[in-house]
Image (spheres, rainbow, N blue to C red):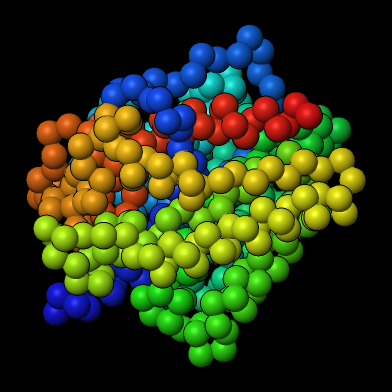
Length: 367
């Protein structure tokens, strides 16, 4: 396959939408914030793409998988689980911090225990988005289909704890939603499928309407406490810089893609309180992605990072998914790399992301 086509293929299959990062005074090796005295949420439900998919794609006919080494090399047991990182993801760390459980299993995992179902799962699928076109080639599970999985989950939960208890768990659970990056990369930036019918502003509104419809569906199913992530600085992803044929010695974030992400985030931050006012009893918390992550990129030393423009796996410029495999060499210390592969953050970054949410977003649910 010609190199240019390889870049485009990886960009098409891009699966990243990081959630959030940490405070500006982080130590070189982060640890999770101390757990509160009692759980605030009885369960955690997760929807979105690869940064919150803990293994659903293992059970889907797609090439977007992370079920081989070196993925998972820092996960307990040093095993690949389907998580697109060297270790755990943000939902795992949040669940642990909240005293729910040590990690969040994928809903499609066979033989989930009653306790696993009672305390929550992730429905996320790497490579997915709000736009159904995003998943059409990769066969990932689009966000709209993840709602159908959630309905199936509710039936199982009611069979375990009864209708009243199930409704209480769903209403009090923390719901995390993280998607959108794949939509812009797949349909606007690298392969501009949607540019034939939308300009960038029009596509932003199209996606926000899809998101609004999704949130309303979750609300009708009983969800009340929902945190919604915006977009990261997409132009700073290593694969995006590579796709623009930037040479290794002069790699810079792509300003146009970052500007589009910022514009979308402003619209999302405005939408959520407006929608919350229309949904009695709901709390919709905007989770900033762009600024905290951009701070990590601009001031890596404050976070203990020595490399921010390429991933730890292979050269770090193109390796992700099947190109990050048992034959691919990896860096000696992933905790010094912001990115694990050319798309996804390292576990160290995810710890920072989780701590940011703990400090800045979770308190919003107390108000």
